[in-house]
Amino acid sequence: QVQLVESGGGVVQAGGSLRLSCEASKSILSFNAMGWYRQAPGKQRELVANIRRGGSTNYADSVKGRSTISRDSARNTIDLQINSLKPEDTAVYYCNADLLGSPWGGVDAWGKGTLVTVSS
Image (cartoon, rainbow, N blue to C red; front, side):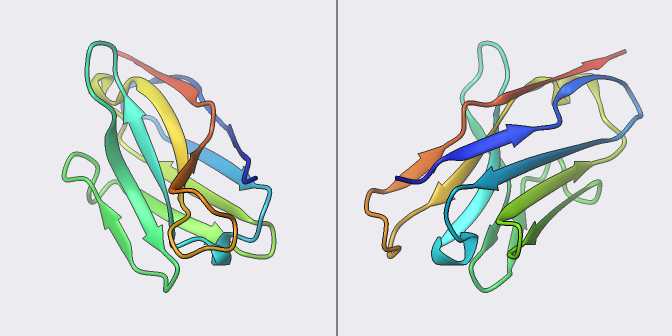
């Protein structure tokens, strides 16, 4: 079973930066992809950024140009750096692993989430 644990959430002033980290219990290179999603109050969960096994990345338009997703395969972690934070970035951020084609079975795995609050 794949477990994901997020860290790094908190309260940040608008214009500031935040770095979120997610540690996986299995080799992240065994996953099809890993990513960060977020869910704001009253809204659907949405993709923020992901990184595929081969290293290609994808960003939501709302964070493109001010965020970076990275991984450390030795530590089995992925990080998400978001700069120039806006109040609309306030959400619970979830780490996700796409397990399709992996040895672990199942479709995907989710962390419990970490709350990011951006104050204006």
